[in-house]
Image (cartoon, rainbow, N blue to C red):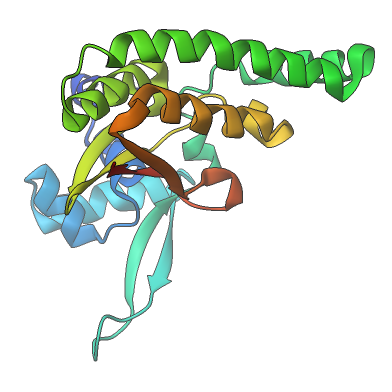
Length: 219
């Protein structure tokens, strides 16, 4: 199976299985019936595709707590093997570089690398988001930058707030080895939004969440 990095890429493969993996990556756990409806295929076709992915160790079933007085339902989630199919920017090389920097320059060297990247990204993001006149426009620009960078980003309204949703982290290996990368990303977001609002991270992959989510609140 090829690497998946966008819904178009998944559709272009012509493989329903690819589209199922993409839906589970971006939507989270789903039932077979949900997948069939989203893909506009019959329940039997959906079951067949799901079974192929189960047999290939790409997805596993998990019981979800009941809603109200309902019964627990089985939904499908991606396995580690399936997660690895999504782009992870030079993960092995990144890990080796971080280890080498720590070995030669210590943690101070890593801090300087993170600081340098933060400054560069801050300049880029601020320059781009300055083109937005409203908070919504700034968030849209920010989401576009992140999506292009491989974070599978999208935005959703939450009352007067906006959510920046990142379904994938192409630098996850680096972030796991050095939390400074995550701290720097949040600071870059704050700088990009500027006086228009505040940004807080409400979900974080590194702490076990399926995705990273940032809430942008108007000033």
